[in-house]
Length: 436
Image (cartoon, rainbow, N blue to C red; front, side, top):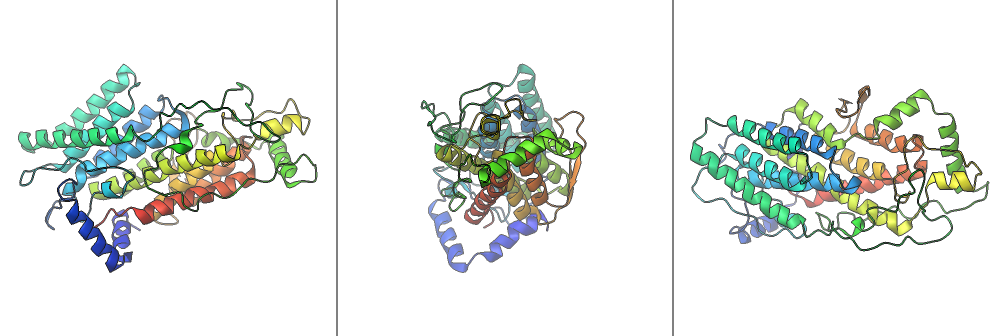
């Protein structure tokens, strides 16, 4: 399915009553929303500006602080700003600002004045890259400036006043989105004391670091109630009995770790630092969608992954489940047993790779279709052979089981966590209307 066909098909699935309600809401908010639409003959713009800034942020993310919660958040706010800066000129599309959680009216275009919408998107993406990656190196910041200038130079056939106006509008939208981002609670530094009890999480070797992202589950989701029905319930009941299901799942992880096959090791290392946004970039480079479809895809995937991360950590610190290495070394009497992948400093259940991979795969499937075949080429992992996949779901399943091979999760955890992520992505898709 073509990306443009997907967003068009969602329109046909809406009932007339909801369409009428949407029209009334749009009319009511006309003064403060960037929803002005061009005539049906409006030009179709290239989506290259989306791919370019997605590539830039992938590079910036390699050295950015904040851990697994911060990266999806940055992509999400960047994608929203880029989309909202361009949407007034995208035929058939509308602002998603009124549908997002707590985002008020955004800057509006000036009626009867011309804008060049790729230039609006370029300026917004550049501004978001500067504000969301403040610790970037001097070289990184110079690269942001360079990409913005090179991209703007490609629009030199447009009148200078139009380009200046467009850049200013993109910057204004980015400033408003960034101001909204600062109120989401991601800076919550409330002290955390982990609960103490049998089977609960404790710091793990080798660093025995304290728990991280303990307050991330309280962040404001981008889509209200996006995790409705996502939580999969408690993990396997803890038990030290050799005949228990808990012992059996730990034994599987132990046995795999003691006799890793070459393929299991390859899978574990492939997914250790891989990025679903890199998958999105590769698909965009292959599909070459127009600006409207590319910007909407970037936003839908990014919002689903960001909200999935919030749900993930909310569940992690609700259940506070211990890690395999703790159980295997103590209960199973294997003090020398170790993991292939270092155990991250937060509870075992649910699994982060599975929740975010489930969300990403479901969002990508909804946009690009089921059974989308592609070869994943991680650009940031030296010496890793690209891996072919028959679908995004197949890749997500492998991403989940990679953490079993790495020694840091139980198999059942990875399986149910995929469902948590998929549910969130479907909720986001159901609630966000990009098309009018």
